[in-house]
Length: 474
Image (tube, rainbow, N blue to C red):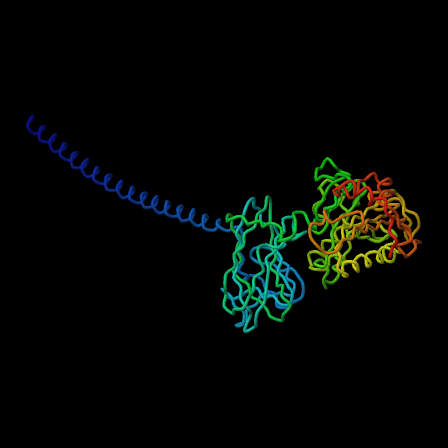
């Protein structure tokens, strides 16, 4: 009996050992398989993550890419078009997909006449950006020119970037530009020659970095500051400080001004005119608010003067800025306007503006300062002190000073006691005399009325003589 019991124990032990061995084998094998699967998943996930990061890094290289593939515009009318990068305004421009359009994909931008393509949105950037785009003559067209322009104030004013590009090839070539900004930037592609050729553009990109553009010195024979719109001085010591709410200095590129928040008008506007400012650009008539007015100030718009009995009277006139579209359009900002009696604006003031341009066409260059003061003008609806719910002041007087020099360089040093100065001070009245010569006065009298110091950068001994002069009007 004892032996039989021992045999059963041995059998049971052997069976248990076999079961344990099999279980261990199964667990080990399964664990390895599971581990293998997890390792593969981890590796695959890692590769996917790496690829994803690489993809993001690659796309982040560019701040903007536009291939003109999305969206379609087949007529040359001026209108906005939605492209992959955002909304663009096309003037005399289309998206061309013909065989004659030289392109990278199926479409390219095509511009004719003096057309352009303007970004209607900003790219946020601080520092230098590099812009590249491909260009060629359309079809078999012969020669053309184009320029890249940039705006750092939401399209309100543009400046040329780099040099004009001459095009003589029907094969796509690449142009590269650099621009610098402290906030945001948008671009405009412009055909600038006067031929009947058409130009293609494609693969437009903007990326961070690049060599900052070189700033060149003044042209030979000129001096720094020549032709500056405020060369003769800052009459009210205006500054671009938000604390100076009623003497806020603004530079519009084609003129400078001191703005009054409480009046909703400029105190004065200063600009320079030479033969280079006069061309054949048509009047823009695009009255619009000034985006550079601080956000919490009352914003004068193109409709503010409607029904008031007063014109939207230019300080720097449209006719003084006809060399380019940008120059002309800059004069239609509402910060350049005052409520001006219609007959005063359209006759008296128009005559003085035309006379000023005639001096330039005769070989002179002129520096002009225009301003207004007081409250209460007489428009087509009678005497009015304020318009737009008392938000915009109607000035009582409108004045202008014109300094005339023969075309040349080193302007400040050329101003002498014999330099011609024309000063007028007029009532803002619908019944004014149409002859500006009826309102001739001295700069000194305007200074007494305004508490400004005019021609402040002119040597004082010379200035003292000039401010007492009264022109003959001939």
